[in-house]
Length: 236
Image 1 (cartoon, rainbow, N blue to C red):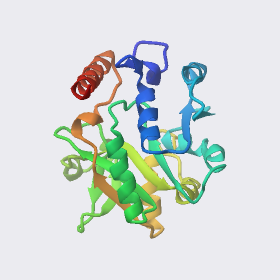
Image 2 (cartoon, rainbow, N blue to C red):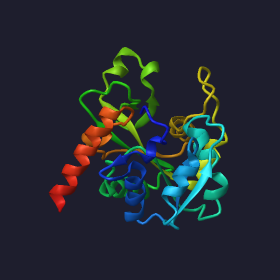
Image 3 (cartoon, rainbow, N blue to C red):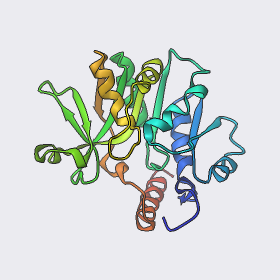
């Protein structure tokens, strides 16, 4: 982003991008919101000084997305371990509360251990692919670098919208292995672990393609800002 500012604090429609994610969680009734912070954590904490509904946990060192959830375990498990936990990316300000409602409804209606909200997009380059079995049920998330040619043609992708049964989530996190190349732990491995345990993993194609846009450059930030402002104007 060519900036010392933590990415999630870059403004989209005049607010830190992570604030839109926090608001979506609050809108669907999340009882607790926990931000996993790392680089620039003091700045992120300061940005939410006026939000008593937001708490923090520090990931240091930063060893991947699975590790990010692991470091939140002591905070999460002080709450309702019989409940469910949403895991979302802080840099996805185009998130819709309605998408989360669809995700949660599928998860609870099916009594799943894990449910993923996916998107079908024209150009899946760079995204993990959702592999389904012959019955169209979840089989795996395969990162692009590990895809076969057939898997590369899959247009259903993983935009990192997850709902887990809390206890199943943290039990599975204890079984995560470090990636052989990066040395990191990935949350994308957890659904497959649960599946191997005979637990139910659901997939719902619920994320609108436009909402999948990632923000890694100033140009992408400007595009997402434009989309969100247009969306806000249309409902004003």
